[in-house]
Length: 110
Image (cartoon, rainbow, N blue to C red; front, top):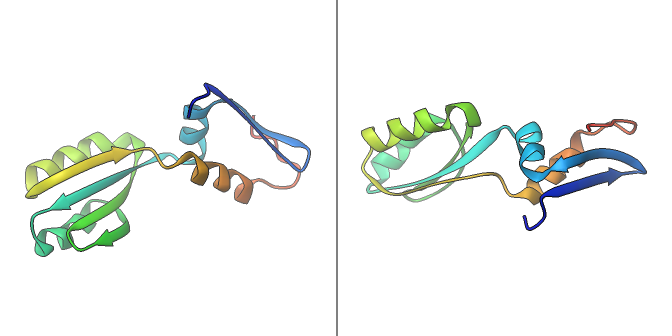
């Protein structure tokens, strides 16, 4: 995340050349929202707001489409007893791994 530009080459083919943020938006058009709520009952309700990626007691991580993140987070804050809430981009390592998994042998994503 220190550099402004990233180049991804796979099997001698250029897959991507550009800003890191644009790669994340193109390949992983979602945000990760981690919600820590006061009770286990509230934690069970979090699942109705998005795809649950991980849950540990009252702490639930959701995957939400980027375009819907603000609206859904506002609803969560309004409707549930929140202890803490974090919104983050997926880790760049996961995005790059997804690039390699999805790229056909001769693909150029640039």
